[in-house]
Image (cartoon, rainbow, N blue to C red; front, side):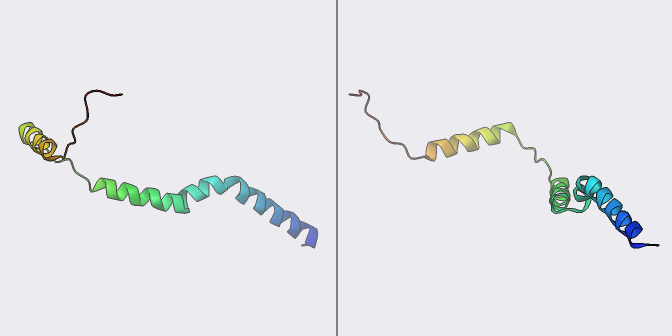
Length: 76
């Protein structure tokens, strides 16, 4: 095999790698790892159901406990 054929083979391999890089990086790249980690964390989440009345009372207590300021009723 002569050197021009080796150069052409190397260029062909580079073209194929460049064309397939977006697909390959989506599988093995850093973004893919973050996506897999996020999917793993989301799989462990669960919805906690409670009585609606308890939630409403809790929110009302929190709102009542908030500090307030008196604003003047007339603005100049």
